Length: 95
Image (cartoon, rainbow, N blue to C red):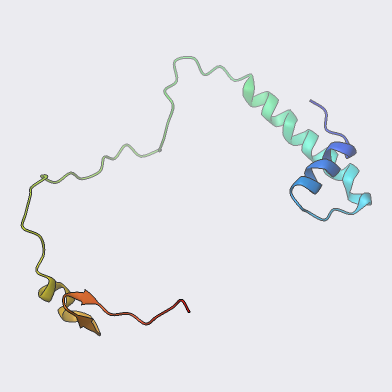
């Protein structure tokens, strides 16, 4: 897929990127170079290779799912700068 100056102009307009006319052709050449690399990557044989979501195989620590009576609101809000009736009081941020 060859990218020309008209395609770069269109993509720049859609992305709302101001691109001077004299930069369109160099950008088209750069993008064509990137597309060449992508085409080379597409030719790599990946049969039998498992997809990776991470380079580290670490699981999340699990805990027992136990039903409790909930937290003690007074204990939880004890360190709050300001609380009322078991709720945190914060400054109003919306007029």
